[in-house]
Image 1 (cartoon, rainbow, N blue to C red):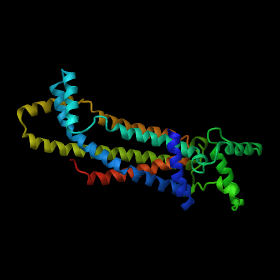
Image 2 (image 1 turned 45 degrees about the vertical axis):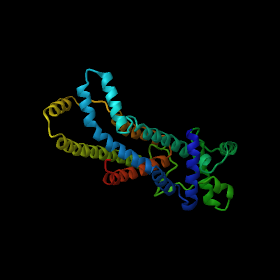
Image 3 (image 1 turned 180 degrees about the vertical axis):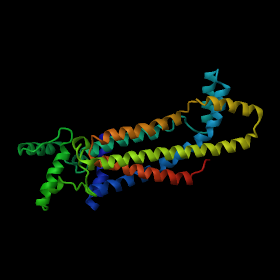
Image 4 (image 1 turned 30 degrees about the vertical axis):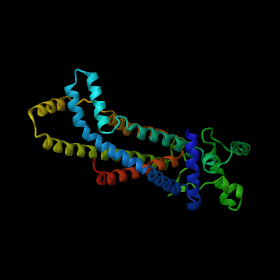
Length: 302
């Protein structure tokens, strides 16, 4: 499945590369295209998150009321989600798509000649054998990256050779070699620039999301107090609920887990993958931050 999506992404990325002739710039434009394609889903997810937060006060009341009757609690919660036309696991789709993107991009960046240039396996093996016969070192994990490095060097000497041009990619981006792999270049400080920026952007993204959710919760509490007029029964229930506040909200738990798991997975993979992958995640994170700020201002709860 990941190879299927990597193949599609390769067509798109190579199409962009043919125009800009720079792997890093092509990756940035590609990331913007992916974000635009995913925008309808992002809008739907943002609406769902806002709507879900408005349901939490009702869910807390149910959890207090039926805390000794789990079966009744489950039935009432399912009825509430059904009445509101929502699913408690609607956040799972976004999580699944993120995982598909994560590994599909890894496949594509790991093997750009296969997925971008559409070079067949037999031809690639012959190039690897040729390099080995010439005494060149070829990595078992990233043979295509080593082929590209060698042919990039040859291209500088012979720019008119069609074969050389097909196997070369301009991976120099703002002085950084996007073909480098941090794990294989531990003494080169430049390989840490993009991963560190990615970590910082992930931290900013998580803090921003938390701040927005806390702001929405405060607004919902003000509205809820006004609407319910602070009845005695309502106040007693909410007082006890606030003390306990250990409810299980599947959507919130899923989003919280993914907000930590995805950056950790991405950082781990970026250390053993070419820098082009870390660049994709960095740009994706920056776009996500901008997207959340804009959508949070534009989207109102139904």
